[in-house]
Amino acid sequence: MKPDDKRTRIINAAIKIFSCTGYAASNVPSIAKAANVSVGTIYHYLKNKQDILNVALQTTLANVNSELTTIFQDNESIEGSYNALFEASSLFIKNETITVHFLYGNLFNPDLDETSIQSRQETTKLLVDFLKKGQSKKVFIDSGLHTQLSLLIGSLFMLSNFYWLNENVPGESAPTMNEINHLKNQIWNGLTVSQAYF
Image (cartoon, rainbow, N blue to C red):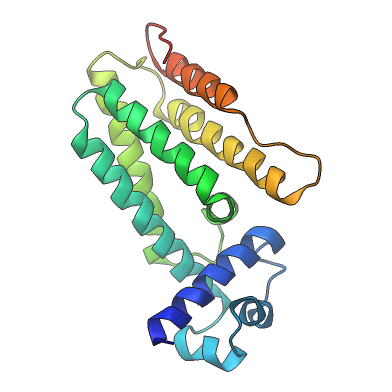
């Protein structure tokens, strides 16, 4: 096995452990067990649990930021950007529920280092710039950016929680496509001056 494969396995295992157990309750031996490596192997690649958290977060946000950059560059219209953003987010949430749950629980973790904080700020800036552009083009209501960011991202994180519950709690069901489309419409209608249905 290549060294990079082991490091990737460790990071993926940590994301799952942090997501399901919580960062505070997790430890390096549990991550090693989930990654099927020795504790010594983990310390060969990463310094400690805090380092694992930061590498996991930075790796995940690098992918998110790359996707957001592509979406906003490839779509001229606000509606096109919104559609692409919602579709990509929905797919990410559905296919990477554990990773999204990890983000939800750790974006403001007090153990984040400066690089992780900068990665988070880059994500926020990409989304805020999109909202500002929508306001300047008179597509989005000229209201507080924190409110619109909360509406957009808060709704998507709640969607991810429903998927996570479906995967981890017996008897819970995932949202239907109809419910997801309703959410897409309601977020858009909350952001815009005139209502529309997709």
